[in-house]
Amino acid sequence: MKIDILAIGAHPDDVELGCGATLAKEISNGKTVGLLDLTRGELGTRGTPEIREKEAKNAAEILGASFRHNLEFSDGFVVNNAASKLEIIKIIRKYQPDIVICNAIDDRHIDHAAASKLASDACFLSGLQKIETIMEGNNQKAWRPKHVYHYIQWKNIEPDFVVDVTDFLDKKLETVFAFKSQFHQEGTNEPETPITSTNFRDSITYRAQDLGRLIGVEYAEGFTTERYVGVKSLYDLI
Image (cartoon, rainbow, N blue to C red):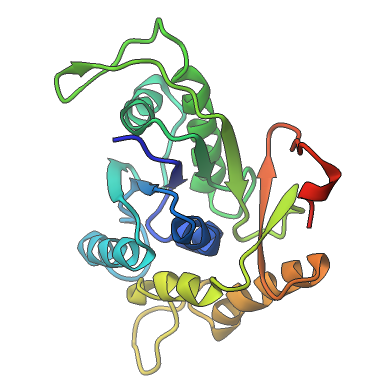
């Protein structure tokens, strides 16, 4: 099964928070999107891996993703080693995405930057024919995505480009808050975390509004890229 876009996150909910509206927009345009979580988020202060697994499945269904896989790497200890890269390469070669979107290149959580470099390196190595991988009993062919982009997370990193998601913020919020265990809830006795405040909840919208303001639309999501962004014409720009 070939897909158009593979979105990778260190933890369940990273993808939804980072680029949920963009993915929803692309799916509405007929693109196929797959989700790959690297860990189960087992070190999260709230909830359990089992709860987050159910929430992740629900979020993927709301989004309309073609699939969601979890590699079950160790939360808090994501490492960029050969074994980890090979597991991601297997997924890339199986689904042959044209675009991979992954974690922020620099962020508050140490797993985010580690996962960002890990995924990017795997995308490059996946294109080397002499790296042999076998999945489901089949020898896999080399495949390198055309583009690797990074969504923005906790830190306000300056984007290299932004996507107009004006009609898709509601869908993003629905997928994000499918992870009920992780965010603000009235009357809960669960410990507070940096993402359980109402300020964080509101920030999902006001950050999208601010990026939208800067390009003259209602809402937008920002991305960084390791390569120059090329356009065929000046008229391709908003």
